[in-house]
Length: 292
Ligand SMILES: NC(=O)c1ccc[n+]([C@@H]2O[C@H](COP(=O)([O-])OP(=O)(O)OC[C@H]3O[C@@H](n4cnc5c(N)ncnc54)[C@H](OP(=O)(O)O)[C@@H]3O)[C@@H](O)[C@H]2O)c1
Image (cartoon, rainbow, N blue to C red; front, side):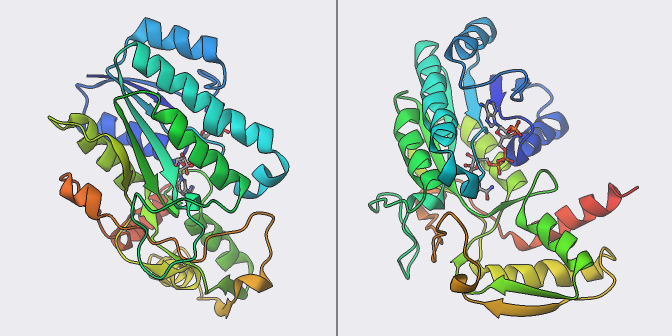
């Protein structure tokens, strides 16, 4: 199988590359980061797809700077919508299966039970709106799966686990939002789910939710990360943690209050989400072993 990966140096892209090199060496992977393939360049996308003739195009690229997007809607649109259409049109033309990742930010966060795939969307931010439009652009290709995920962390890039580790070393006390709930998801588990999808005899198409098992608040997630960091010897002392409401931490982009997504549909398709808890240990171990 020939797979074209875009956004290869992001969290999910990096984990997918690791998975292929460790467990799927027979797969022909063309992993491209922005310098090798800028997906906003339609001609470049066409050229690469025509030359490589992939069976699968996996788009792990996105404009993920949620707050910056509020003042740069054109930039967010070009990567999260226009570029996705470039890829989905190329996939359609070359009969490739298209895998695209979306987000819990397509919902407004006003719920008290897990969001299901066909619940009406109501994004509250530029990022969320562009990701929702990107879902439609992705489905221009008949053979497309859109995987919505949430609260992604890994040993790569920027994420909450790495931020907590840095702040935990720098500050004796941290104030963390306690009234937003969601499901953290390890990028390596997303990579695994994508691999199961593309290797399936009958690949599922349409919109699916995939996130780590176990809902928690940012405060609870921070507490877990920092306690584990102490256990792993990455942190000398547990900082004092103070739960705060969202109102005390204003950001340019509004965050969903309740982001938990139902994963029943993907489970029915044969893919089982896993708990994010052991992946926090895994990431901390990897970060520890990468220290000089
Ligand atoms: N992170 C989260 O918490 C989260 C939550 C829900 C859903 N998601 C979704 O999950 C997917 C993967 O997220 P992630 O956390 O792995 O993102 P990430 O670490 O920010 O990686 C995104 C990658 O996309 C690349 N990129 C941006 N513009 C590009 C362009 N024009 N051409 C080619 N590459 C480009 C970036 O390259 P540069 O570094 O050069 O900009 C970066 O390597 C995204 O679709 C995201 O919307 C993420």
